Every structure is written in structure tokens, then in C-alpha cells.
Image 1 (cartoon, rainbow, N blue to C red):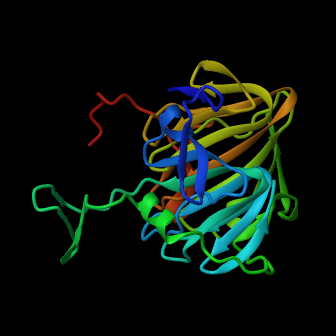
Image 2 (spheres, one colour; image 1 turned 180 degrees about the vertical axis):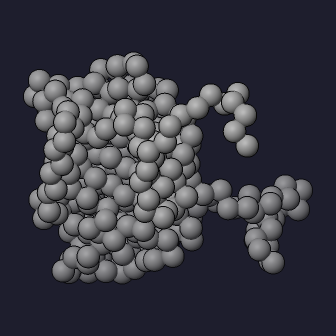
Length: 306
């Protein structure tokens, strides 16, 4: 388990024509496996990425600071701090155009390695029942730069897939030593494959009961305040900018406890219908796909039970 901090992660500044920004791979630095999160600080008056759409991955963006325009298949919408944007798989081509003050954004997504066998001598890759040229000519960013920036119209009324933090209803949960106020941004913006919540943890309290997942992967970014990350019997200090990844199947329970002033955390997690969530303090087990919660009595694996 690695706790990374976004200021310590190597930067990569990438520029191609109208595209420009500084990238940090937060998820990989923290040890994420099937999902990732990158911090992108887009250069003033530049675009974040080539306009693109994913066939199997879902992307969720959270704006940390600055201002800009979300370009979606020719339509444009203003975005700013606290906004959450969801781009579902096989939806609209999208990218971000940044204003004079730049844009600082967290980009979450699944790592999908769809099979496309590469034939290096032939210079092609198999793609389903056909094939495509591969490894020739300019790379995708350079080709996008040659195509020039997309045309920008006047910003319109924002779609349901863009939500503002303060517009999402806050839900409070309080039981024992767990006291948290949460806003479900991803769900409010229509995410399907993952969720993104903002949790406000009260001083000295937990954001959830200690738990571990069999199939779901979680990524945490501390936005404000400080506190402790609990991993099994260990405690690790965290603060604004700390990044924690919890891949599935570790069998080690985790949670956060707020410091003297409390703590605000971005909580990203996949939605897996076959997930089993275990709470070791109560020995409760949640079978997520069928909506059943029960309690198990652990036994020694050496016992003859079959």
C-alpha cells in the first residue's frame, strides 16, 4: 500500500498545437490497478486533450480550480470549481477548452486494455474482424494539432451530466464513531460504471465503518483538512493532496478518521455487481449484486466443513 501526494508525483508537460497542459498520474503513483486518476493542469487558453470518446471506459472529471468550456460534440458548456462532469462510454466526443486563468482538473477513468493484437512487421493491428494501420505517421496528439482546435459556439444550458457540488443534495450518516456528510456527484451526473462522492468527515470521526471489497476498487483524494487513513491495524497521516488507492481483493479493511478540523475527501469507486463487502468489526457481509446483508461466523480454513 502506497500513499502518494500530488505535489511529489512527477509532472509531464505536453504541448501539441492548441493542446497543452501538465499531467500527473496520481492513480498509478498510489498503486491503483483497474482504474486511474490524473491531475491535469491545462495551460491558459489551451485545450486539454484531443476530442475523443471511449468505447468501454467511463470518465468522471472534477474541477479543482480555474475556468473553462466543456466541448461536447460541437456543443459548449461553462465549467468551474466544484463541477463534476460524467462522460459515459459510447457517448459524445469531448474535450475541455481553458480560459485565461487555466484549469485544474482531476480525471478519473477505467483502464480498459481492449484486445487489438499488434503485428509490428506488418504495421497493422487486428481489430475485431478487421484491421487498422498502426505505428505509422504522426501520433494522435500531433494529428489533432494538425486538425486545429474545434469550433466554439456560445455556451448553452448545461446538460444533466454536468453538476455543481453545491447543487447536489447532502446526505448525512451518523452511527457510533462514523459521522459523515456526503454528496453523490457521480450518481447525480448519471455515471453508470463508477461513483464519485465528496465526503465531509467530522473531527475525530470515521467516514465509513472499516471494510474491504472483493471486486470494487476505490481511489481517495484528500481535498481539505487532514486526518488519518486506517489500514487494518495501521494508521497513516494524510492531508490535502494525499492520494490512496484500494484495489479489490486485498482482504485488509480501511477507512478514514478526521483530524482536529475534520477532513474533506473525494471518494471514487467502481460499481461491480458481483462485489462482496466485508465489515470485520461487525462481521457483516454485503452481497452487493443481490442486495443481501448478513453476518458470518468465521471458521478456521483447516476445519473439515464440506
